Length: 217
Image (cartoon, rainbow, N blue to C red; front, side):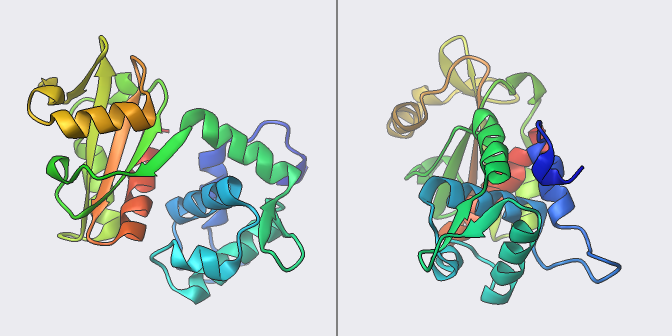
């Protein structure tokens, strides 16, 4: 049974498979989180052209072209005339699965909360129990974005408040404007996680936010 025919799709497994070497060849330059970002962008903005996608990602045009080819060969996207790429039925199923786990993601001005100029925040549903100190998410962002170039900040919603592990620091006390912005944009509920990827370039911030988010699945 092909991936297109599967009724239930594990989106993280699908993205990891997408980034595997094909037919004994060298692995593609993109990583699973790049695939997840691309599919999310196409799902939210379809139809989305290749050049438009290039402008929203930190990887080069050749890598984006390979990524789109892999997504097409896997049956997740298809060309919609000359307007760009759109999701297939299988792609929509995958996108819907991702959207249940990560329903919202925005560039937000929360510079005081993060290490770098640009920040991109993903809302992750019902994963707070997996967070102990946020170090794994931070380290994944650094691994994928580069030391000194990227990072991640993890916040959880507990008892109606946004707190930062491991000491459950109530960020409203010191970062009122940033906290209110996160609440207004993402509307977190108890048990939810906010993963904020940061970098000195917006596209990289979006990508490391996804990389850090994927550690929760």
